[in-house]
Length: 74
Image (cartoon, rainbow, N blue to C red; front, side):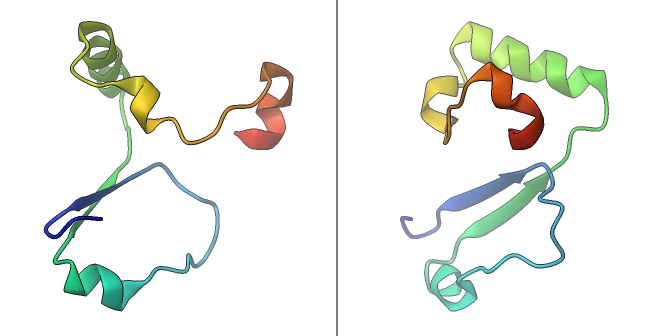
């Protein structure tokens, strides 16, 4: 991550703790932002941003798997 970068956390993990390199992040002076969608308007806004090209969805997808595995992956 570049200096003064941003980490954006979306959703929940379902775990009590998550390992995080705190000191490395502190030296990078990064921002950590947590997001949680609480209404359908958040989804509408996201879909609009993707459709308009302002949010390049292909660049933020970290994993791909078959649709048949959705229950184990969700």
